[in-house]
Amino acid sequence: MSDKATLTYNNQSIDLPVITGTENESAIDIAALRSAANLVTIDPGYKNTGSCKSAITFLDGDLGILRYRGYAIEELAEKASFLEVAYLLIFGELPTADQLMKFEMDIKANSVVDEDVKKIIDAFPKAAHPMGVLASLTSALTAFNPSSVNVDSEEDMYKAIVKIMGKFPVLVAWTMRKSQGLPIDYGSKYLDYVENIIKMMFSHPNETFVVNKSVKSALNKLLILHADHEQNCSTSTVRIVGSSHAGLFASLSAGISALWGPLHGGANQAVLEMLEAIREDGGDTAKFMLKAKDKNDPFRLMGFGHRVYKNFDPRARIIKKAADEVLEELGVDDPVLDIAKSLEKEALSDAYFVDRKLYPNVDFYSGIIYRSLGIPVQMFTVMFALGRLPGWIAQWREMRQGKEPIGRPRQIYTGATIRSYVDISKR
Ligand code: CMC
Image: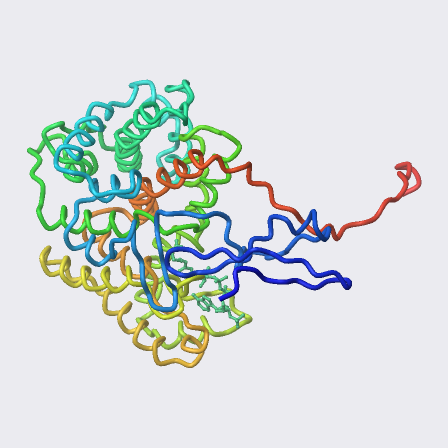
């Protein structure tokens, strides 16, 4: 295979290098294009544009493959703990037992949030969307931890990482408890990372807290499945904000805002609301299938379709199986699970969805599990953010340590050409 591509334009030929990754994906490196030919490329939505080289996550949308640092998502979801996966994503290798213990201890030592943060939480209306609250609180952490990270120091970087890994679940749990009018729970250092999240979210002030094993195993799996997904909208946001040398917490806060949208992480909330709407409407899935296919109707089948997966989303397969298991273990009978399964069945044999390669994505079944765990629907995207945290951190670290330049795309200007100012009395 050639390691260059030749572009001919205006009788001029320009050779552009072709780079190949470890999984044999190739890309034309156009860095020299503008200086050589005074041309830029244009690709709205970046459908064909690689923004960086990355050694963190590999996915093949045609084959439905997702791997973190070379490990198949199926194996990690089955065998690993979320903290192990976080370590793997951020530092590149699975931790030894000692490394994992140190990582966990250091995170625990950092899982106290300044009491003044509670004043900020109290200032939000109870009905505020938790994603807005979480983005604000994550940004506010910068004010409480003003020293910037020296990215050239591994030690400094590590300190910032364990700090955010420790404090983020606290913010998540406090955000949920605020919306429910429950007092804050400070967690316990005697619990592991996922158990502590469950305690901080679900403990009741007048009850002894006991971790339910099924809840823990389901949450562990969901967090792992959401932990990274290469250059998606929120991750690209984290990288581009960080590329201006904005701090880690500020970059993460921007990522949370990007994740909030219903075309991205916000889809998990939208899916459950859609399934509920179908149920309340009498459960006629065929009617909603028609709406989804009608180009004059803005309705989309939420939780379907993906920019990269054009065969199946491996995360959706695992989550669908887990939904069946968890609901059975917890003795929950959720009628929307049947509605979801009917929708999937109909879509998979419908020419509109088949032709466009639209399959259930990670968000289609995840909400059903979250709901069975007792998580309110407005918190679903927050749970996605909790899982995605290590991915965002890993990508930010890779970008900063790789000394990537500031992200600053070009454009093709299509507005008015030069014209003279007209006095207001003459307009
Ligand atoms: N329902 C109905 N039609 C759809 C859907 C859907 N969910 N998704 C895509 N299409 C149609 C779309 O109308 C277009 O049709 P046509 O070619 O006739 O114009 C075609 O499929 C291609 O869609 P697109 O919007 O150009 O594809 P995209 O790669 O830009 O968008 C997507 C991908 C995920 C934003 C989109 O499929 C979608 O809006 N899905 C619903 C929202 C959702 O579930 N998002 C979660 C994504 S996975 C988790 C995450 O990233 O956070």
